[in-house]
Each structure stands twice: as C-alpha cells, then as structure tokens.
Image 1: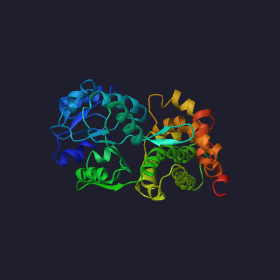
Image 2: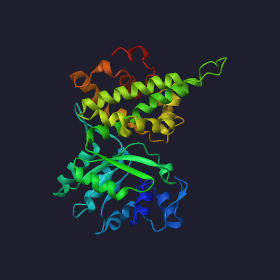
Image 3: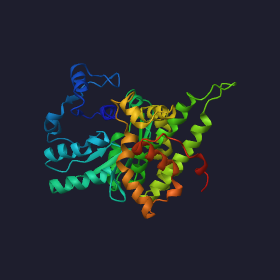
Image 4: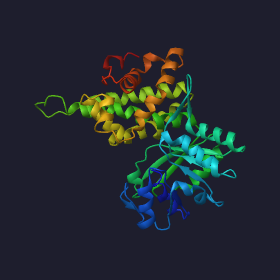
Amino acid sequence: MGSAMVLPFADRGMKVRLVGTHLDRAIIDSVAATGLHPKLNVTLPRGIAAFHHEDFGKAVGDDTDFILLGVASAGVDWAIDKLAGVLAKPVPVIMITKGMSPGAASLAAFPDVVQAELEKRLGFKVPVAAIGGPCIAGELAVRRQTGTVVVSRDPDLAQYFARNFVTDYYHPRTSGDMMGVEACAAFKNFFAISVGWAHGKLEVLPDAENKARNNNAAAILFDQAVREMMELTRALGGSAESVWGMPGTGDLYVTCQAGRNSRLGNHLGRGLTYGEVKAGPMREDTIEGAELGRAVAGSLRAMMKAGTLARDKVPLTEALLDCLTENTPLDPPWAKFHMN
C-alpha cells in the first residue's frame, strides 16, 4: 500500500522517495532498476527514487515535506527507531499502518503512540495523522476510483494532507475521530476472518441439490461484525459515524472480498485450526487480523472483566479470540448474535 500511494503523490507533481524495510530488498532493487513493482505488478511513475532502509536518512534529507509510514503493525517500533534516528525537525507523518497498541485494560491508536514516543525521544512534537477506509493497493496502483478518510486530532493537519493527496481518482475526506477510524481500520481485518469462514465452510458442506451457496451465513457474520465493531469503537471512545461510514462498513466490505484475512477464514471454515493454518498453507504470511487479535486479546478480555466492554455484546469477538489464542476451531455462536 505504501508503494501504491506514490501514484497520487506523483500525479500531484511531488518528488517521491520510496524506502523499503529489510524485507523489501527485491522490491526496491526492481523499482530502482526498471520501475517495476513486482508485487503490485505495475510500473511506478518515472522519477520515483528507491532506497533501502539503511539509506533512510539520505532519503529524508532536509527537504522532506511529509513522511508516509506504511510498515506492517509488527514493524511500528522499528519504524519509530528509524524516524527517531533521522528527524532533526518536526516533519509531519501520516500512517497507513493498521492496528492498535494493547494496554493493561484498554487500547491505544498507533498514531497517538508514534507521536508520543517520537516526542519523548526527540524533544519536539512530530505531527502524526493516519489514513483509513477502503483501499485495495492493486486498484489504487492502476488509478481506480478510491475514497479514504484522513484522521487527525489536529483538524488543520487532516485538511493539509487531504488537500495535498486529492486527485481525480483519489478522494480523501477528513475526520477528527481518531479512535473510531483507527479501531475500524484495525478490527475490520480481524472480523473479515469470520466472513471468510462462511465461504470456507461451503467447501466442506454436502452438495446441495440446487447448488446453493453460503452467502446467508456470510451476511449474518458481516452484520454481527459491524455490530461488534460498534461496541468496540464506543468502548474505546470512538464515534458510531466512523463504523457506519467508509472506515468501518466500507473497509470491512473491501477486506472481505479477498486477501490474507479472508483466506485464513476460509481455511478455518474448512475445519483447520489457526495453528494448523500457520504451520501449513499460510506459514509465510503475515495476517494482520490474526496478529491484531493475538496482540490485543489480553486487553479485550480485561475490558470485558472490568465491564468497559460488554461481554454479551461481543460473542463473535470472543469466538475469534479463542480461535486465535487457544487454537480452538472457529465455531460462530449463532444463537448469541441476536440476543441483544
């Protein structure tokens, strides 16, 4: 996604420097040599400068207007180290990393965590915003129509990014609901696993005489996912508007269409446990929804115990947490979905 974002930047006439992590050497080498991004399978616009992470300081230089941070959630601490090592002045950061930081009995939004840690290390405030909403990298990379939400606790910063990113195919809007947008951005990956379960389950059901699919089950799970995202967002101090809008239902819809979270759900629907999936067909994959669930399970269970998150309102969340942390089969608790 970080690479796909160079399209609106380049089309706005910006000079873009693309920096890879230690996992992206082949990508950076390819972009530097020919412009071809091997994972997106597109040639990036001419003039994109590609750097390995060792040259991050050189890439930032002293003329950078802003930094877009697109590492996976597990790389946030690594990214903070890299930023703290090179920033000599406040350079705005906008994050497309999805996830939440677990606390003893609550969760924090990644942009808040990054901003606080950078200020602690650098001694000055680095403005941090984020992008949420439905955006498939491969579609953005070929300039398909895309709508997103730029969120910041500083309305002027959100407007700054939205103004600078808009093109005739990339349509950002702004929000001040940091916890709502970030909770949706993180948990839609988590809940997409359950919707994928319905399609995997179809593969092991007996053939129906009329060739019926399993879309009814997927729809129930989608509805329950939205309901539980609402509960989680409210418990974290976010707004219902984000759940019903692009950050919540919009992004969940897109995520359920394809991707690693849905593939994990498909395997679970066919009867595998999470441990079996990770030891077998998806052993090389980073599955953001599963990583999130495992990282925040303790925090969510503590919130349920404390009563800040109503346990009877989130039965699908509990089933997913058990599946991901206790290696139990994912068995949607259908009867509990409409009790409240």
